[in-house]
Each structure stands twice: as C-alpha cells, then as structure tokens.
Image (cartoon, rainbow, N blue to C red; front, top):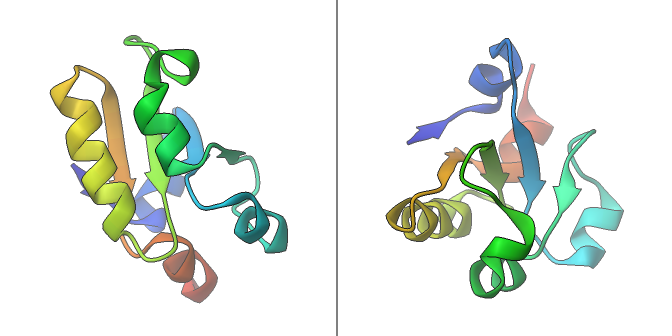
Length: 94
C-alpha cells in the first residue's frame, strides 16, 4: 500500500495528502496542498481527522514512519497509503 510521489501526482483523484512530520519541519517546506497533522496526533485522535469514506496519502521525512502509521490505520479500516521516500523523495523528483 505504498506509492511514489510520481504515482501520486499521476492519480486523477488525489484524495487527501497529509504531512505527518512535526510543525517546524512542515513550516520549513512541504508538498503544496498537504495538511499537517503530526503522526502521534493522527494515531491517538484518528477519528478527529479521518473518516472511513475518504482516501488519504501520508508522508513523513523518508517514509518509514508513514508506512508504519498506515499499517496501523489500515487495521482500523481507513483507506490510507504511504508515499515512498517521504518528503526527501519529493525534493529529489524530476
């Protein structure tokens, strides 16, 4: 359940993009259009941010934290995908 930013940007309906890094990292740079919800907040207060009908794409700095969080959220029934390589991969895109 992972995809690259190239895959994400080629989707006709992109869903909701969430940057799960801390607020300071988000302010220093993020993918345009991404919401910032830090990983711990999203994990412990999931129903305040997500619903079961929408599709969400999560990214962190390099992809490990978002992959783990997506596994946990999928087990709860949410439609979530992790973006491989995270924000660092976004910075290296062509």
